[in-house]
Image (cartoon, rainbow over all chains, first blue to last red; front, side):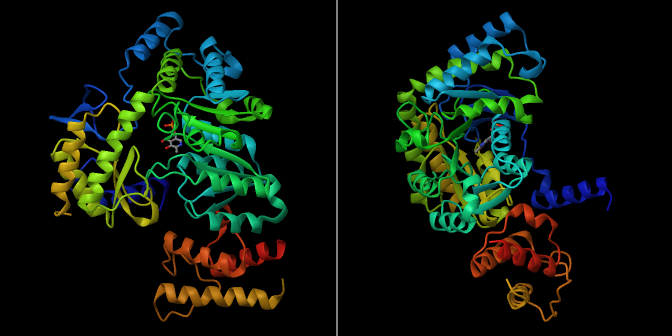
Length: 393
Length: 84
Ligand SMILES: Cc1ncc(COP(=O)(O)O)c(C=O)c1O
């Protein structure tokens, strides 16, 4: 099979999962009306397939800041910070992230994906080890592969398995990086951070926590799982993204280790890519202020999460173990998931369809993400529709 | 690690693969696990987890990219066990 034939074979496999040309992936969104509504084809749909957890995509403060930045500094930086320089906004946002996490250093990356790639490949290399959760996001896997370190997985959130693997490493623990996520993106469950920290300290490793989905969602000021658990000082490196609660695009890493700064000179995903545009940085700075003061938004978000999680559970759906803004119905087959996804769309509800191998353990997921801007009525409509469709799966 | 340990690893692999493939095919060391034995990636990962526990080792997933045959897997487990 030549290279193009291999792609054809992959297309055939994909089409066999998605009959009738259903475009469940990369669905065309024609118009966006608000943080909760958009138009898909002729339908005005409720958006439950975004990561817009605080509902800030149309926050006037962020839009204004982005407009002003474009007017003042133009549409793009046209190059990497190493070669083309760091704008005031890049440096200011790095300081603001460091302050937000009470850390000494912060680095901004062009995407959250690159934040993980750049941080992981900067911290470990060939001969070192990364110990990662089996359900880790692709950006973590790819960062590990880029690094050339040995990649050892522990069973998802299983601390007995993690300890076993730490013990087996022997002296190699000294050059081992443990990686976990605040909230896991598929099932919405949280890492057992207290136990991870206990093991990390016992074996004297370095710990990186990706707060991509937990930033803005957990903790009084929205720092994430580190704040909810009071373990901020125990985590060596925190990465995260601007693309979810902060409603723009970009990523960051913060740390109290001064060595973080060295990444600017060795990390390819930081160096060999253009820096975030002025508008992106400006709206993110404004969103970070709203996020840190957003305890009312978090209260609203959690009220919505709890309402939908309990309604789906009562209806009989198998869900992830923790209620939260990511609520995934676990289904046995791709066909069941596709049918539910399609029926929801026919009821004007847009959610995410996740098929193997992206979903854990060969299962398929219909994944909802709830946000603070959803009204109680919208959430109730979604819950009632899921209930109506349950018997048809 | 001794030769008898190596044989033990090979024996266990062949036994488990023969259960997983659910057929009468005689498993031999040079068989390709994916193309000849039709072991899918999830079954292979489960098998690896079982082997890891039996021999008390962790097999890095990046080391698996070069593994195709039963013998290559046995060699890898043996090497990791000998180094530990
Ligand atoms: C856990 C996790 N880390 C990192 C990322 C990457 O973030 P970004 O969208 O900014 O590239 C994502 C987003 O998909 C994620 O879910």
